Image 1 (spheres, rainbow, N blue to C red):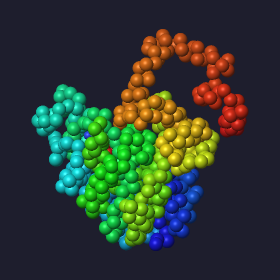
Image 2 (spheres, rainbow, N blue to C red):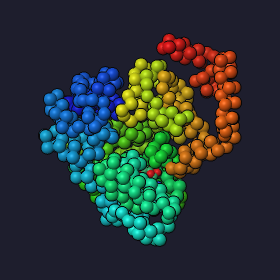
Image 3 (tube, protein in one colour):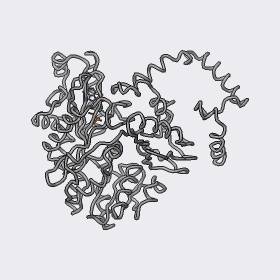
Length: 505
Ligand code: ADP
């Protein structure tokens, strides 16, 4: 086993990997940019090394620096976390060629699966169902038109090397072909250094359900159940749960076995996720493979009892998987809410600044994977995910009840966060029913904004509302920041909170 591992990341995921290292008796080595001098991951690591100025292009993305620091510190392996260099085949290659171990899949598998066109071709050959699409890149209006003739509108234009929803455009009308093609291509050129785009049929109201797999270096591959990731905003996951409310044992086995096939076809080793879209008839289609630890991995950990980061490290060190497929038992239900430093009242714009007071929820079935603390200044340079709140229950209902309770307990002041937004989703009848699609947030948010006739329409109305607001706040009738109805009812609950806020002022 390794004695020292360098973690080429920051924030909550660096903290997560550090925790696994500590439990395994491995010395974790942290790296940090100038913007992260006060970050939580430094405080928890044994050693920490500076790697440059705040922008990630000058620090967390500089491969040579990371390898250099790993060697200097005497680390034998590098864990990339997610994001940054986690799915960069060149980095994995460089790490291995320097005699270090990359805690992730082999570079060839990353390269193959990072190219969505090649990945789709591989899965077709392996017998997996895929979303209908073009076999290669498209660049002309004519090609798009003939695809529309065959499959109809809408069509999804996708970046061949895409990720994070970038370089994606929904084409709803033929009149938009040229502009959508151009936009998608230039966006993917800017983000991924390659403007190749291809077409997929745009599935109507699908669900996003993914399978976690583990593959060791000895040819064993197992699946660890599914994660329901349909609660998304702009094609990015916001809430995830396991199991999915619509997946039964038979469907789980079919999807799991397909995922294992996919992993084998790609020569996959380590932890990975095979993503599928599921239509209203519960037919599933291969979407892509994420060749890294996912943000949402904790929900799988909660229902399987397995520590995925430890498994990643053990697999990288050459150990065999501790279980066969039969040994995997799913227990209860888990949900994760991604807590972002974003302002839901202001189109989810990133909200940076100092966290004035911070109190994490706890109690039965609650887990918080966080990268922040009270007094910490959230830097502007990186992804605004500050923590993940995960709850477990014996069934979905209990997991939801605990999540609601935990969201009520969670106190983060000084910056805007998505905590209150999650409370709304967790109260929504459609979410509770388990009957939703990837459009849930877009539809529900638009619906609630449209239904609210109190929304000001004219400047005159805005002025009138502002005057009333000003008057009431000045007279102390409205307390800004005390929006939760139940909190307002119970002065004992809020007394300490007001004190805490006052202290920081
Ligand atoms: P990225 O790699 O950029 O995250 P994905 O291929 O993983 O892109 O897709 C992200 C999300 O976009 C999916 O979860 C789904 O909501 C939506 N999506 C992708 N492809 C399709 C499709 N063919 N039809 C409908 N929705 C899709």
